[in-house]
Every structure is written in C-alpha cells, then in structure tokens.
Length: 344
Image 1 (cartoon, rainbow, N blue to C red):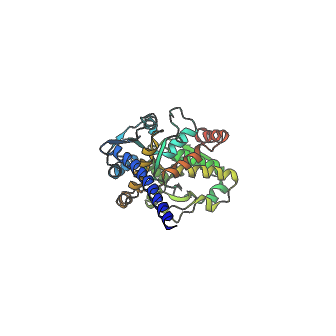
Image 2 (image 1 turned 135 degrees about the vertical axis):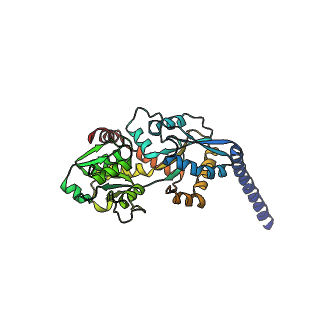
Image 3 (image 1 turned 90 degrees about the vertical axis):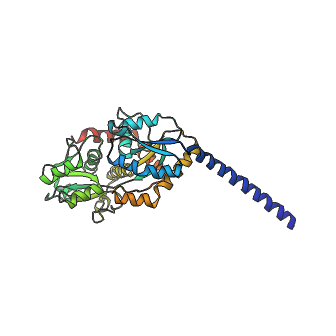
C-alpha cells in the first residue's frame, strides 16, 4: 500500500514538473522575443499634450518589464483616428501599441464617422491607463446652479465646445437629451481654458469637462460645479453629487447617462493590432499591468496630475463591448442624431 502511494506521488510530481516547465518555457519564449527589440507607442496627437506626456511617462517602465527599448512616435491627425487606423492595420508582432482616447474612438465608431477604419472591439486590449469622471460646470452667478433648477426653469443653456467629438460637445449633447433641456452647443472654441474664460465673462453658460480640469476652473472662480456624470463621486470633487444621486431617472434617461459614463470609463486605453499570437499577447498584457502598478510610476503620475487608474485588459475589453457591441442599431442611430445634429 505504501509503495503504491509512493508511485502515485512520484507520478504527480512528474506531471506538475512538466506542466510547470511548459509554462516557464512559454513565458521564457515571449520574454526572449521582446529582449533587445524596439517597441513603439503611437500617440495620435502632437508633442507636449496629455497623451504624449502619458506615453513618455510609462515608456521607461514598460521597457523595463519587456526588456526592450520603447519609443514614442507622434502621428497627429483626425483627432487621433489617423494613428489608430495605422495601428489597426499594423503587423501583429506585439511591438506596436497606441494610447487611444477610448471615448472619442468608441463614439466615432458608433456614429460611423467616415474616417474610421478600425473596430475597437477587435483590437488587442492591453489595459486602461487612466479614467476620469466628467463634470457639468456652470458660470458663476447663474441662477440655475443645481440639476433640479435647470430642469424646472428650462433656460436656454449655451454649452461651449471645440468640435463634434471632443468630449465637451458630445457629452453635453447627451446630458441635454437625457434631461430634455433646452440647449445650444457652440463649437467655436480652441480649448477648454478658452471656454472657462467665456463662462467667467458670462458669454457661455455651461461646460462639460474632466474632473481635474473642472476643479481647476472652480478654484480659479471661473465656474461652479453642478453635477458629476458618474455612478460614484469624483475623488477630486468629493462634495459634488453625481447626477444619479440627485435625480430619479426613467429607463430612457438611465440608458443615456449609463451609455455616457461607460463610454467615458474607457478613458486612455492602451491597445495593439488585432491577431497578436496568444502567448505573446498574454505576456505583453502582463508586462503592461506590472508596469502600471509600479509605485514609482503611480507616484510620478500623481505628482504630474497624470494619474494612473488601472483597469486590466479584460476589464477594458468588457467595457468596450458593452458600449459598442451591445447597442442596437436603433440606439446607435439615436446617438448619431443627438451628437451630430440636435443641439446646434
């Protein structure tokens, strides 16, 4: 009996050894593949912008995890779509990545912009670098400074924007549709700082912007907070309630607001071309996750006001599928009308 147990135990050890050895061999193979090579991170905007700064901040940490040289390549054009289209058709060798504005890329695909040559649900997702809740702010001194007041008074709200798919314009359009507000979106500004000055001068009534930018404009006395468009409050504006807290929402309103918050949760996503070999993609995803969890990188991001809010590759893919693949054609058509035409 003891001899039989001994043989069974020895057999089990052999199985575990060879199974582990195969895993190590696979990891070692992917590790050896990257060692000494050059990888690229595309940025769809010019040097010095937020996406460029994120790329240059994470590049050395990712290089250390891969054992490779990681360089940043700026490919501005079409609001980042030029670079994303190039990435989508790139060789699936695991050496090309891109930091993408997930909300803008996802919305552009949903409304079928002509420039779109990619499918965000089919790229190789590597994870989310950061995700910020967006905030509705209004000009100081405006009588309607709560959501309830805006709904009951029904003033004409002039929202500032910089373009059709810029976060501010399309986000404010969704708010206006969800709450059935009287709105006019002015897309004539060069940037959010210019809109904030227009708020302070009384030329605009409202702006939809990320929480960090909202806090800066509020602290400068250029705006007041109305509501955060998220399921949880912003850690940068903890006193500002979410729109879900202050309203009892109908199913239609819930659809619009949840659509927007899910879209915004994509944040700055890191993607690679489709069809990367499975073992290489797994290694790359794990390397990205390890790099983004590095305490030194997290601290550097906080100091530079470029926070790292990690979501894993699987979490990012699930959000992408939820906001793109699970929408009906009728819902996509409604989004297109609201974003492009309704509040001009």
